[in-house]
Length: 168
Length: 216
Image (cartoon, rainbow over all chains, first blue to last red; front, side, top):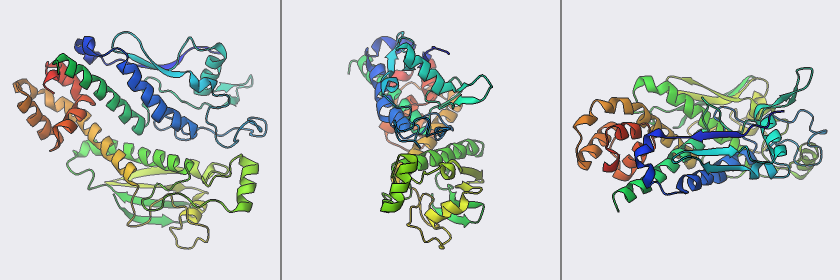
């Protein structure tokens, strides 16, 4: 099973010439705030943060899984909390920020993250774990509320950088 | 964005919402995209409200708790005794929308439509406790949902107007000229709001390409 990271990188190239004025850690802080206040609460309610994906698929056989381990009619990607704890924002080179479950997360977390994001099939080709996408891929967008929060995160970072450029 | 009409039949329980007012000044070719985005917002926000046992419709607030007996049964079967209208999940999974002109029709389509009317009582014939998630005629969505829709429209319009700005921006040299151009493009708003829309949209790229970002 795949053990790749489940992440998406925002890289606004148009900010290259104000890059030196962007305070280190600002981008990461703003995006972590979006993760904590918008993305994780959506997942906790059983709603995919990805535009158009709506409610997460229900469990196929709730008596078998999750059984009595958790509420059985609301898949919210949380059993121990280990996986979502790894859902974080990280600044990579300069002005880009990568959010999601990164490649250095524990192996079992990466396996679960990929299984939830993409779903799995058994040897007969039947769905074993339904896909419950919690991260956007190329060509996808977060839902409107999260997308607007991301736009505003950029506005906040750039406004601070412009102020520092002008020495205000 | 008031509800103009509702429908409660065996295969459709829905509300048709007029968005003409919100779309005023929006070029026709942008409307379909914006209406599709608004429809999706209404679905997402409705699901979110239901998960929180709240109505997305203005004036209804938190849903009444389930009666004890039903709550016990639901908790045994689903693990949750919440009044979240999510038992098997089939009704809320059938929530969808379609767009026609400047209107969005949102509702439950298919076999679960009567169940949806049971909760919403758009027909006036339901005897169940009212847990309204589709607005009745003359009603509207809660303020936070309306605000989100306004934000979606404003940022989408800003994105779409960026290419049109390119031809005009060459003459801009001062802060006053830049804000005048942004106001002419995005409508009369405070400078703070114009800055937010410009920096949070594709206009940012145009300002960057023309070395004008620092005028904001």
